[in-house]
Amino acid sequence: MRILLRFFLEKPAPHDAPSAENQENKMDQENNENMLFPVGMDNTLSTANEDFVRENLMSDSFLDFVEENTKPIDQMFAYYQCAIMEVETKFKVLDESLSVELERNPIESIKTRVKSVDSLLRKMKKKNIPLNLSAIEERINDIAGVRVICSFPDDIYDLASAFLAQDDITLIAKKDYIKDPKPSGYRSLHLIVEVPIFLKDEKRNMKVEVQFRTIAMDFWASLEHKLHYKHDLPPERAKALADELRDCAERIENLDQRMQAVRNEIATYNEENPKDASFPGFPF
Ligand code: GTP
Ligand code: MG
Image 1 (cartoon, helix red, strand yellow):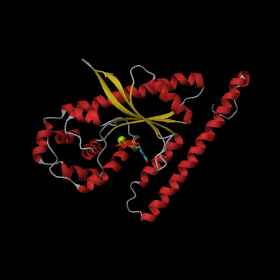
Image 2 (image 1 turned 30 degrees about the vertical axis):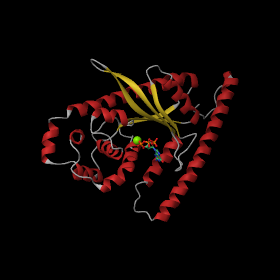
Image 3 (image 1 turned 135 degrees about the vertical axis):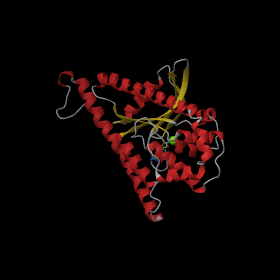
Image 4 (image 1 turned 45 degrees about the horizontal axis):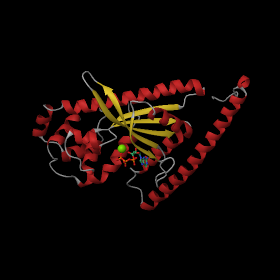
């Protein structure tokens, strides 16, 4: 897979594929949503992606050429994988250390992914990014992705501020779609950060996109994402489902707040009654 990108960087694609242009945004979202995969680039292309690559990038001379030039690309992806490992470890450490104080784990799960090559190519095309590695590193912020899933909204902000307070983390951008949801109803806290990775002879700062969600927000985003791929739905049904999802998003926001309030009350009770600090049947 990475050899295709190498080729793309060295020569313009033979011709444009208008259908691919239309799919770029959605493909990138798919890639972000597909964070169930552990770090790695080896998942096979879907048929649509394969078509994109075939139509745009493949030729015999290209294949000969790229086989000789794969290393810098492989290295770049390896660096992003290292950055993901650094960030994931930081969250595991925060989860473990906070669990003593909170008597519960603030993180439910962590998902990570490196952007797929075809998704990267689509984004480069969409943003008209020059065909070289430094331009990619400079202008694409989500090659490395880490998604942190929490039970409660407050945990998101506590974790984000503890993470950002670490002296080797540099905040590049913050988008708070929890306080200010997208028109679709999408809620999540996004941070673009730089984290150093330490290599044999050098230290490199790598960008990582971190998305924080509650379980409910993540559930919603996964389902809403599927709607993007239902191209065969009649427009009125697509609109009705989008409306329904917006309504679900509002209910989910309310549910998150209510669950947070219940948990807070239990925590307060536990603090005020240290000798009888547990409610039978509640995992707090
Ligand atoms: P890219 O979308 O990555 O090009 O960058 P951007 O600057 O537009 O970032 P934004 O913060 O809007 O979105 C980044 C990622 O958040 C997306 O790739 C998705 O994973 C997720 N996301 C944003 N909006 C939505 C949405 O409406 N629905 C769902 N399901 N996911 C979304
Ligand atoms: Mg993205």
